[in-house]
View 1 (tube, rainbow over the protein chains, first blue to last red):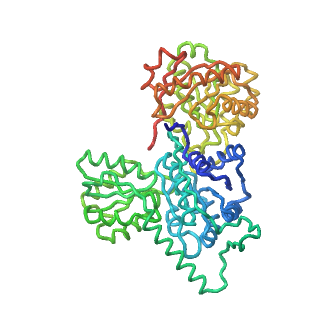
View 2: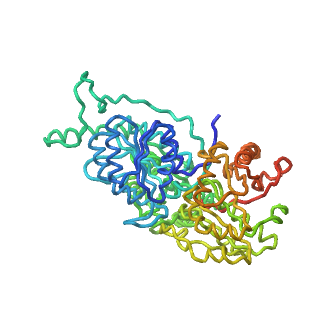
View 3: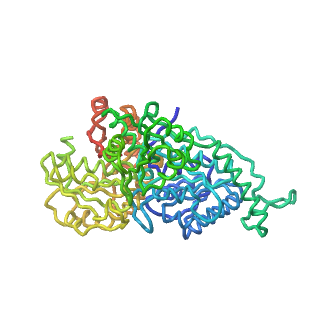
Length: 354
Length: 225
């Protein structure tokens, strides 16, 4: 039987990471993510792990590179401006094919922005965000339980594909408290013959590096890496469909806005409008297939986001612009209300102008 | 409940582990004092929690004629750990009841240290430890008492009683609350302070009312999502 406890989303991430075998956490405090670090600072010393508050986000991500090179499970967490600082290191992790879990509990931007929740780092997370040809696996939880589940899943995916896996949450998901059961966490052990564990003079030395002196070799490495990305796109897409069986209008939303969208869908159906939701759980790889299939059945899409319409572009690409895609959004730390989303559904139902 | 309100001190302070329900209990307690005919104000001393603040209940408090003193930055887009000077009006002027919502853990309670000398000098206060068995870092009585001592050290005040607020949010069952009673009693025994009251929502009040002493019905703050 699973034992439930009451946790903040940020705490659930931290506890799930520990249960997933992570014993190395490097971070730097920033609202609204700080509870991840605070929780780690209490727990890690009691279980023989390492909690280290680095002197900056840049230092923290470089410590992640170091630990990951040794084959250990390692993570860092931050909120939007802090993730920008970590971006260089994320590109180096990708260039070295190192697994790591990076958590972004988003707040409003750009710049210092504000401390209220946001989803405006969608581009940064899903399109790379730093320099070079690379992808992160991006997971978008929509409940405290999913914060825990996807954290554990994220470590497994990162190890399996030797990639950075990013949890893209927002301040509300990080701060809200819900009952959660953090057990049934399966650690999928992966052999790491590439790790720097000491040769003991028994094997050739391993090198972890992202510098290639010959462009031919760098090109080859990039081609091979994108073969790996193709496998991720084929095998690891996750999404949820909600009331899509007979939907005329398809809402697309992730994380906290998906919860708002569900309330609005129930209200719309009470008014006789058949709305449904496709909730991407993996933002990269993006659930293109179910969206394309929905484009043949639905008359339009509404992308519900807490940014200026970043995911909307992926919805248009996935559906190949077969049907109109409308935007229902708030930004800068504001959350769309179910009433606002309902109004967008009603407008779209009437053939709505953009 | 009448008994609890009759014995209410002029100043009631709610402190405890992060996320144990202090804000919700403080708001409910202030409303109860008001309904019992007392002139009451509530102060938000939380400088660690960015979201879900006393200020979220501003309208309910105002509608009930309860003055709220809170940082003008609470719930805003800036993260300033600043407290308004007006809080001194509740500490230094003794003409009404005052309820204090203290931030979580020792970090949150540090802010209370600034007012503790005046509160102790007046000597008409109760500092209540809000506990929740379902918070993982305070799941055993020993862990809860450890946190309690850290808070006392930071606040420079000793707890005088316990509020058992054990809950799993809206999923709380009568069984959950009953299961928390021995936990609260054990903390009471180790800490040497009494359990003043146990909180439950309306949904399960009737189910447990004959089984738990000093039961208080509370409602949860409105959720935005």
